[in-house]
Image (cartoon, rainbow, N blue to C red; front, side, top):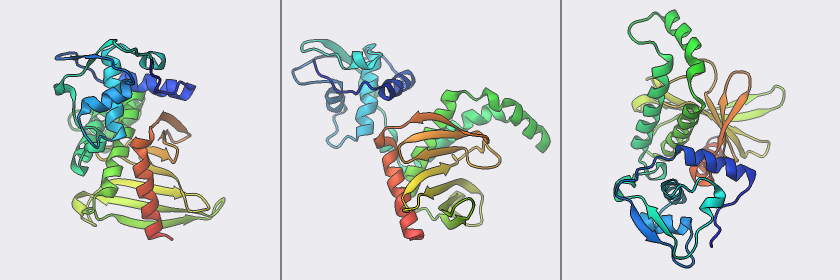
Length: 276
C-alpha cells in the first residue's frame, strides 16, 4: 500500500471539492495493474506521458483517476495495493489544464465562465439601465456558490497568464492610503486590445504588508462586473480565494500552490518593479 495524500481536515475539504468538480468519462477506459512502489500520483504522472508535466496537470489527472475508480475519499485514494486493477482515462479525456493554457485561452475561458453569470444576472431582450440594475439585484442570489468558485479560479488563471504575457501593456499606478494606517498598493488595469483609452477588460489591485510583501490580490474577471463598487474576488498569499460581498469576504476555496503560486510571484515582481 502507498500513501501519498495528506488527510488533514483542510485536505479532506479540498479533496471533496476537487472530486465533486472533476469531470469524468468512462468511455475507452484503460485497465492498469498496480505495480510495487506506485500510487495514484505516480500513475497519473506516467499516464500523462509528458516529461515535464506540471504539478497541476498531474493533480488533475490524479483526480480523474480517483473519480473513474470511485475513490471518493482521501483514505480511498491512499489505499492501493500491488496487483490491484484500476482504470485510467482514455486519451480523449486528456485535455489542456490551466497551467498549459496560452494567455488567449485563459482569457477565453474566463469570458466563458463570466457568460454563465451574465446568463443569470442580465435580462433577456431590451431593458433600460434601471431595469437591468433591478434585475441584477434580484438575481445575484441565484448565482450558485460553485459558479462563484469556478469564476474566481478562472480569474486567477486569467491574471496569471496576463501578467506573464510580455505583449500586454498595463496601466499601472501606485496608491497610498493613510487611514487607519499607511497602506500601499499597486493598481493594474488591462485595457481591451492594449488601447490605453479603450474599455477596461479587467482590473487588479496588489496589496502588500509593511515589509512590501504581497498580502493579497483583489481582482475582476473579464466579461462581467458582479459588484458595481469594488472588486469581485480576493486571493491571499496562502491561496485562499474569497468573494467580496460588500459587507464581508466569503471564502470560496483554498487553491493548491501550483494553481496560485506563480501569480503571487508575478504580482510581487510587478510591485517591486513599479513601487520600490
